[in-house]
Length: 437
Image 1 (tube, helix red, strand yellow):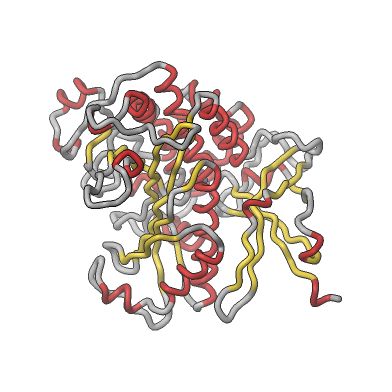
Image 2 (cartoon, one colour):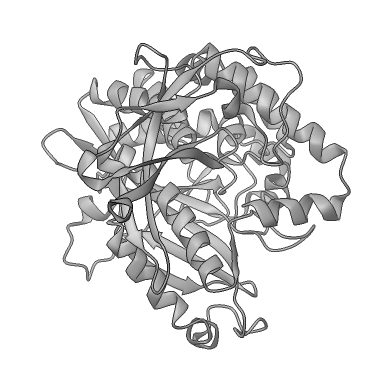
């Protein structure tokens, strides 16, 4: 009977962090399809739906979207439609990894980390803009006025995320007008990036259903306050023991934590191409913004791009299990699988070379003398998407980890996006990103 059928979306997050896909009609009892058709060039479509004129595929090529049953989301909005979608890997027609699949790249990096007897736990802490009919727009930052003024939406959203099994923890009013932050419980490996994707899609869907709009764009106007993504990371062994922490190490880092962190700092300029991946991302990565602007690590310093987070002595959770570092030079125009995979690749390079801990900077780097920055090897982060892409292209470690097909596709897509923005007015560029993300 027709009422027994439902539409399931088979979804993949592309290189512009837009989750695209196609819907298949079937009964719930039939389960997920083994795969559905896809087109390779879809991975390099820009957020503005432009396609690079010069690309490896043109009108040719076929691939498949293979769903991960563990990622299936099947929830209903309160008083609204049922949402059912599964996150997918991109494969070739033989079922092998397609070179342009970001989710498969993260899988490979997780496997490489596992070969060293390690697992990564991560959580994506995401800021976003929320506009709802009838909700206050000019409330103080972090205020109960704003939080209460957006009820019952906030409680409804958290309940929706809980039903989707992605473990929401906090929803708080942020600093800027209409700005909120959503935090999720940490998860191992692929699940952490999946949760980031699912939470963005469900937040947008819930806002639309309420007659409003949610945007994860990194900023909404030149000189405006930014919305970022802070990626919290910790390392664990295969027996479930946390291994990032040593109370006697610099900043509380273990030897392996020092090496991993040093690898992230070493490759930070190139990582920005993967983690701050839009033209307007670099408006956010400025000094005095608490967003990070320099290649450095700090102990509880929010001007550092890599921050050692505090241990809460009153918590029942053991210090080693609490301990984590936070990568701050990211936003939601970046594909979460590329973000986490890139951080693992950089950290693995630090472990392979047994790097010493980077110097801990506990002041605003922009206020340090240039001679002191030079002595510590601290440099300015890229100040444009084009600069970041050049740094990525020159980084042999990250390019090798990504693989030639993914690097070539990513550089192609992102340089095309930059050209599209160059043909737009500044105001229309910001407005377009705010609408799309």
